[in-house]
Amino acid sequence: DGGITQSPKYLFRKEGQNVTLSCEQNLNHDAMYWYRQDPGQGLRLIYYSQIVNDFQKGDIAEGYSVSREKKESFPLTVTSAQKNPTAFYLCASSTAGEKLFFGSGTQLSVL
Amino acid sequence: QQQVKQSPQSLIVQKGGISIINCAYENTAFDYFPWYQQFPGKGPALLIAIRPDVSEKKEGRFTISFNKSAKQFSLHIMDSQPGDSATYFCAASSAGNTPLVFGKGTRLSVIA
Image 1 (spheres, each protein chain N blue to C red):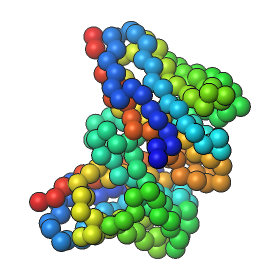
Image 2: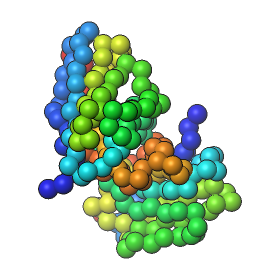
Image 3: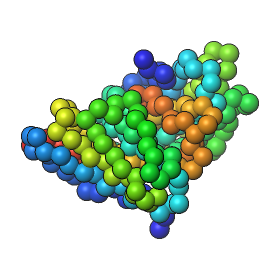
């Protein structure tokens, strides 16, 4: 089945720890995105990549980092600099920047 | 600065009624306006989308109305069903592969 796979579904972070969220797609889409969802806040863009080996900051990039070494993969690292990381993280991909296909999300919580 | 303002934040509708969710935008460069539906614990999925060259688009029970001069667009769900209970997001983007900007979402509850 074609789609976007996010893992893990639940993740816990300790104080001062970096954690990495995985996102893989087999839709052959050029563009990939990371959004953060907080209750009542909608979807806020963290980072996006329109092509391999290139990515741009979104509205709330501070405390996060990404890489795009392969077309299929766009991992997100939540660094210790992100002081309020508890949220639902959504990865998405698209072609031509329009219809987004979303993964099922990763819920990150702080221990 | 919020680029897409969505209202209401929550909505309760009787089964069989009409659900209406509104969005407003400021950026006149926006030319693509989708609506996404999200169920708890899942990622959003595209429901319906419209471009500014038409004032209305209908797909089944779902209709987008678009008012270019007022810079507003809305989602109408006819004959609302309990299975429509979800969070709905409007969004907008401009040409050139720019990312979608989302509204804050509306939690819809359809009660029997």
